[in-house]
Image (tube, rainbow, N blue to C red; front, side):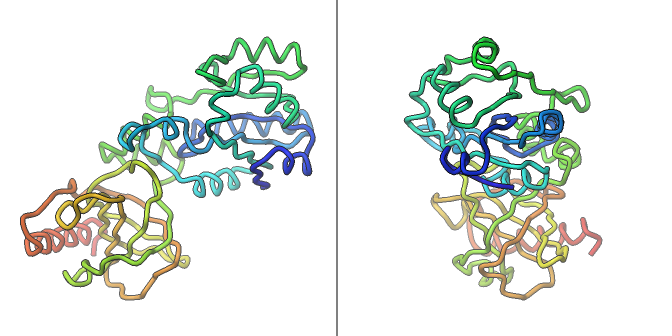
Length: 310
């Protein structure tokens, strides 16, 4: 899969394509249905299948504070990995910035879709809005497609259990800790991938050393303590994981994921781990003392052992 960040680089590879556009947060089964549509058009048109991936999310760009935008299910790196697994030929990273936000809907179509990417088939939701102040819509795309020579197709919609599969619905189920349903909606278990970073070593001092993963997102989709699987070096390990803001020892700052891997003492600093969430143990909470926090962690670890039959 080719990933490009500008039109000139794209045009050095392709002159025409079939395309879809979106944030693709989670690359869930609803997204996968759209990607299958795209790949079907690739076969019919004999053209590369391209995803226009909007980054950052417009809600993040316009947010005045982190709590004003939806939590991210996936980072850009995770999205790209999932899109590559899906068999897409090319991703055009459309940077959502001040210039893009000011671009008229007509110029958006002409400069990006037609002159830039050479889109011949454009698969998009009928609620898609674009251009300055979201003035562009599906009707304008249809009208412009007839005039400029590209076909517009409505995206497929997928329902599971009577609910349309969407990133918003998945966030709601993560908040409820319904990981079985989330797995059905995603087509895989929900996980977070990242590099192990140096922490304050407090977990080690408390008797529960942790692997710490920076989350690189304005808002996190989960808070609390969880029983998790840790995927590392083709192995599946078990861990008690805290994800959040560590209110007992911190007055704020960035969210962190801390994984205490059961019966494991290898230093994983700098290595990539995938943390797969299996069951919620409790909400994150603030304790009056480190000793009480230590006692609670011991109970958490015991519950995690019980969940995994250890």
